[in-house]
Image (cartoon, rainbow, N blue to C red; front, top):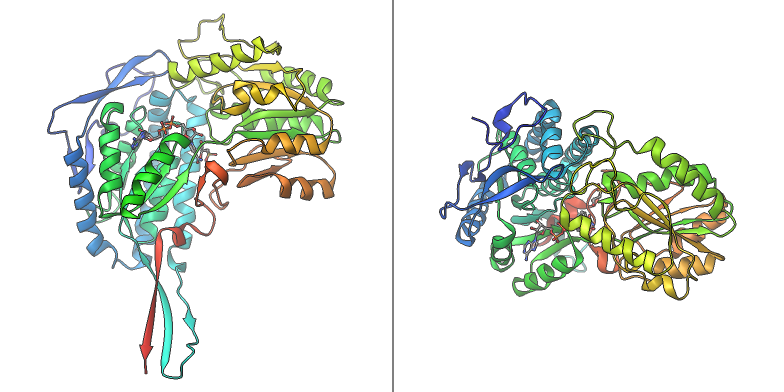
Length: 503
Ligand SMILES: NC(=O)c1ccc[n+]([C@@H]2O[C@H](COP(=O)([O-])OP(=O)(O)OC[C@H]3O[C@@H](n4cnc5c(N)ncnc54)[C@H](O)[C@@H]3O)[C@@H](O)[C@H]2O)c1
Ligand SMILES: O=C[C@H](O)CS(=O)(=O)O
């Protein structure tokens, strides 16, 4: 019998991917408390499934199990790990449609976009697979004739991975792929809003030859999350905590991890500036903005959040944006393959956009298109793509705007005019966040100058998308610590041991 509590217009090829239990030590387990928590479908807020709600002792047990598994998994040769990673990647590809359907169900992401997100998730496994056999130490010439020094890189042990709702498949493969490629074992705690994707990933993982306990998925409600998180931070067997989520929670976890001096990887919130200079190709810049701002209905950490347009091109830019929004962003049922724009994940997300929207209007912004009311009644969490124009002077009011100081995380964009490059850069850097930045200019020397001046871990020059498995992903300032993707993650998940030989 299906575990789903509602009917959806999709038939699963492999219904066994749907489960509501946690996965510990190769076993599917329910909480000893018998408690469950609800997961909802954001399209209509209907109950989708009841998920087992683990307690702190069960998280403790998952960590111990992962630690036991580490004692053998650490010795599995890299080529064998590679083959198992390849098998997991192949299994996900073979079940891409089912996984995408689960993502659509619990996140409200249009089905076609969900297929893209699954492909993006798989790309991390394929990428880490290529790195698996390239973990290297070095040989060092000792300063004494009777010594020889070499270094080796060793896996760290148990990695705890805490992931957000907004990217329920890729944030897991990005962390787990790197950690297990390097020989670690993992306990994943997905967001309570999107547990089904994590469970389905574990179902596929189970079929790929990995020893029991290498991957464990623990599900917790919002209420039990704090105690489960505390266990992950305080348990000395966890050697690395990898977190993606809000800056506030990341800071708390980071400070709690200091008590046992764990390594942490922190992928936190952004507040990306998107700058359009006077010499930009306006059409290209509008395309970039639509990608950057409206992907996932504005719910990614790298979404453009403060859009600065040179005053000489702002009219042309607004006109083009108003033309392209309805042409590109097709709203409709999330199950319709033509739909490219869906609802937000919950009423919490809607409330935040509403607050930013009302604040901008109160401070003199004018509405260009959209607004919070959806005349077509497309569900409780649907907000149409919305554009505003701010007339305020950059140096004063704009930094007081709510959307300017925190991520909107929704489909609202406000265009802010600016006069000079210096002014645009000053405003772009006027934030504690430093994840992504974007700008458009055809001037090659300005491209270098501005890319170097922007305070962020990632810069898009004439592009609106900076996310790829081969690219280091991460932030500076309060947007995080460490990089996921690119060539360094296996270094982040290993420790250097130096060995001195007396000869
Ligand atoms: N930089 C990145 O790579 C990246 C990627 C995705 C999302 N984000 C950021 O994540 C935020 C949105 O996600 P969110 O609202 O789910 O963030 P969140 O911080 O509330 O939750 C993220 C995860 O942390 C868990 N969590 C919350 N409190 C915890 C605690 N005390 N102990 C342990 N775990 C705890 C949640 O259950 C969830 O699994 C945005 O700020 C976004 O920018 C960043
Ligand atoms: O929300 C943050 C995600 O990491 C963004 S991305 O999908 O990896 O670009």
